[in-house]
Image (cartoon, rainbow, N blue to C red; front, side, top):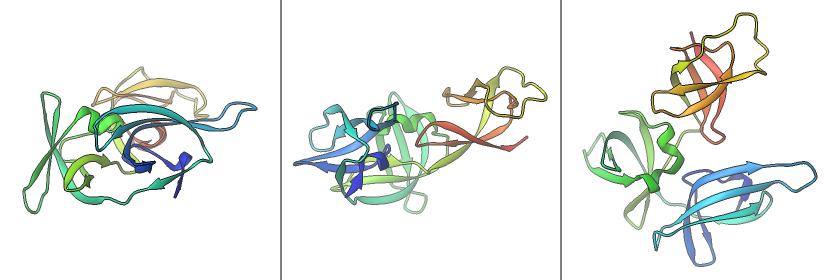
Length: 187
């Protein structure tokens, strides 16, 4: 069993007789209300997408699936190809299969491909990735508090909020679970 707050993109769970893969998980805690997790699922058996909200403390049945390390090769008309570096086997996944992972995909990036009954159904991202900032407004000297933020665009087109001292061309670490800046890796 797994707590709802531990769910993230790529996690496979079972609710009733449905086997679901999490495509998007958004944790939310507001004032006096209980913490909740907004989830977007894809049913592995029917292919249907659904959304739901669970309390962060709710327990769901976690399913262990076969995983295989593969490298991202290329994209072609909404299909994304991944290749096993040892056997050269290739599997294709769709945008729906990948969900939020599209924000971080780079050529030759090694990932865990998730298989259900011999069929590729999704990927499991590492908890953090290092990416180059390809565009952001110029940084300001002296502001090292990290409290004021500005948008920064990555090579994939995804924008993440970063502290004002981050400049174009720098490498930053991003948490793939929360999609937030963690730290500067290099100048």
